[in-house]
Image (tube, rainbow, N blue to C red; front, side, top):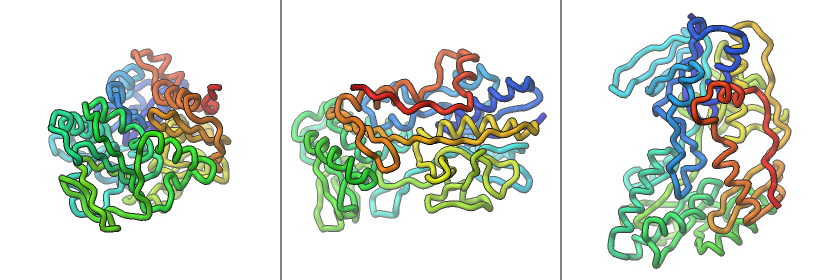
Length: 405
């Protein structure tokens, strides 16, 4: 039996597994001939881009309901090391036992993780929304604060990092605090070392973001860094001390550390260089997709860490890994459009198009698009329908999200 091993069940990993199952089915190979095995630290697929939202009730989808119907095996374990020469992966199970899994083809889709610098107190007192578990922990913390007596620190949230995630967390925070019962004296402060909020959005989008944050009452502290975090607040490099019981860290992402263990080219974010077929350059039998990989998606621009690229990268990697196993032609991934849709909480959203991020729509109209993306477009078919799951995994490119007038 040949084995295709998929490490990670995020946006790229889930779709790689489904894409591989689709191609296996298309070829007519039985599961007894080609095993597709997914290894992930969790038994669920996290709709990670929704971890900032108020309602987390449908952001963790059990893998069994998505993979069992298409004949894909899965196990809960942590991948610790990859030996591409021996085609083996060392994993650690939930019980702490180590095992070695062999593979004929490997698809690395372990994604990215939050960069947590060695700032005093951050590891102990900081919160984040990097994972589903972390997002739940933050919500539980806010709910507990809501049951306590009012105080300045109780009602103040500091969000560190004014990039995409940090802006969405800060913009959603008024509604999160209201849900937790913290209605009076609310303060939300967005901290960033850059001189502007949303530095990557350019001159077109930043005024829209500034307007939305102003309406939402979000304060900013720019050109400063966090010097220390404590249970009662944090200290900035400017010397300012902000009393706050909640500090949410959203400052920077980096590719999974597993990528660094491979003898292959990586970029400044630690991502593996892959060709248009999602093959890791310089390694035989190893594919990669999603946040752990970088590909020139249109021959000029590299993919960015987002589900917008992770999902198609996964589908094409899954298709190609089976095609490669059977000596069939591989399909190149080419995407000639790029959009960003930034959630701005109760104010609405910002929809930009192109790599220069021209403003397309804003406010309520863009919010409809954002909700369509977050609640429909990026979800796999649910209900266990085998045909629907395989059809959704076809190696095709979706059109850009529609605009609502």
